[in-house]
Image 1: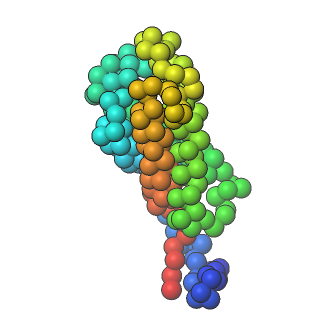
Image 2: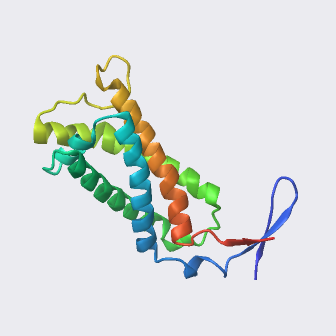
Length: 181
């Protein structure tokens, strides 16, 4: 059985809902894989654009670039599992999302994570643990001093995280139905 989807150019495409979804990785394993891929992508942006990796490591008592990467990838997997917890619910899983829909959901998720984690939690936790004293909230407002560029890069990095997480999760967990022409 298939579902006919009509695109704006009136080309019909059959989407087979029985061929793909359940044959993929378990949603938690898909989230683990997607979280690592998204975390690596985000980490590259952070490493090129800022020197924040040691500060991320400092949150866990490992103030080094390696410690930052370990902590960052662990956080990436945890937030990917949260992403999967929402998207693997029956009410959501039965929807027929396209890969581009997962891209949009991922970018939105990354934006929310950026505001909540980097803009609020990161400066509070870092100040409490190391006394570094980031501006609060740590958001890219002009006049926030030397941290302006870092906060912009953090925002971009979270969008990259979401842009990789959404499609990677969809492919790894086979949440996108197979498309046959």
